[in-house]
Image (tube, rainbow, N blue to C red; front, side):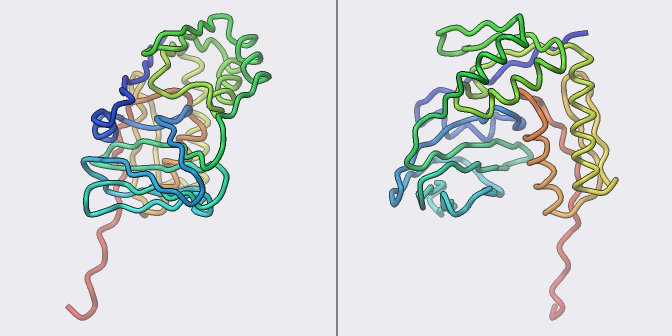
Length: 236
């Protein structure tokens, strides 16, 4: 059994950026979007809604949500950082490059070509790579390649063999055990990842980072994780 997972089309125009969080179901390698900022400079990104965000390295980029409905990216020092964003149950991940150039890894590219016989890059704007992930060696090679700047999620069309998707599920389940200590169940329904359980907000966000680190391509996540209600103020 095979599953076709296509990257979602996002135009580089600012108007399409406003739809990013509303249209992206989940995050996995590669990132959804790359933003460049110079050290000491700012960049505003318009978004219709943002419920929360987390930055893996705040020393590289400072991220602030403005009342104007914009996300402000401020370059702190040269480097690279990931920003995980959530809105209306959807998740996206950005890479912010501060004062750097795209990372190109020719060895990773060659390794992916060797491990994946059905590796077909094209110069097209909408789909730049079509590949069938036939085995675990191919999946791992692509995972390394997709952590570079070679592709963004919207440029991919991946076809997974069922056994490879199962191996990836085992990895995601292991990550869930490490983060939530058995409180979370993870399973695939078709090509969609279903997450169920009761977790704290910190565990919830950490688990989403684990899904990013352990997954390949873009998946529809049915996020059924339940966070506890905040405790009422003692004085009320």
